Length: 451
Image (cartoon, rainbow, N blue to C red):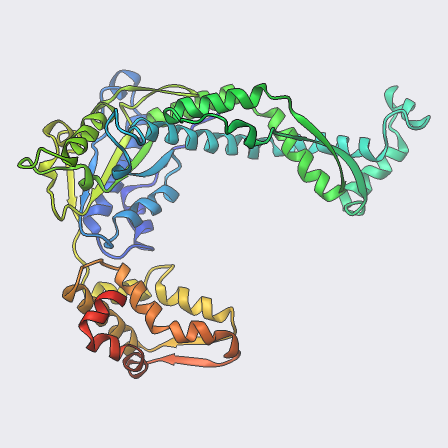
């Protein structure tokens, strides 16, 4: 039986890990860190109490570009638990054309199955390697090909086979060509005959069923021993994996430790004074979400999945609406609300320099591939942060994403001519920035379109 692995980082360790990539937003990081730790704490309790403790779902409120989605991206890499990020705006009310809300649970289950399958594959590699070796030796020395093979059947090792085994392990035979029967799945083109797609789950189930009904095709190929080893390794590992066990474990992980990041939740909130038009559908999506968040059973191709203990982390800018515009029942299922702060010049300077994948590091590394040494002075970094902050104030505030637009315009000429600047050093100074961006900054109308 597979032992479930669950994130057991302390809240402080989680915050420290997020700090390496995301500047500021300490309140949001703490809320997420506590929620993740509470998942681990609940799993340590007895069965009678464990089922009674429900997750405390979170809403992160803040303008675009200040770290909501980035927190979700980093959390997905930190937690050893099924995770999925979805946009609430792509779901529609039941009866409308579009994705239904239950598809997020199916997608989460698919992710969990892939995770568990990958873990099993890694554990079965060694056992499969021995079988692959025997199959490769059979390709090189077909059984019954000479009299010496008969001695092996009687329990005496075959000297020729053992000699080839040593060469195979040392890599001497890697480039030798052998003929191998490779099993191929039926082409997906034959499945594209249904003119109207039903719901996602039914569509996928029908496709899987028809694919399994189609006879598997076998094709004889001439490949090197090195390539044959890789092909056979995948085949043998696949034979060793018990998909029923994988499905059971995957469903269990989804139910006990699944996390869904629901982005753009403000797009499905509607002001109470507006009850006509698209707002009706928005409220319908909220009502469809409610049973999923409250706890219900969703049918997937791996079996029924209960959503009672899945953690939901919602996020939205809430420019035109407020969390209180959501239906009361759904509000009650998101008891923790965290407001993310707008970014200032000091934050922009830190974003440019401090994170492990800081923008300055990224652009310097990109230019280095062309043999160009790019250097930014401290004053230049301050200037870039100041320009980005000013443009956010003068036009729409898009947070840290403004730094990308400023950096692209600033380094456009260098990026274009980089192949011709081999072994040159380019120093980005306030004077250089002024020469590249002065015209755009002076023309307010133009800067609105370009920066």
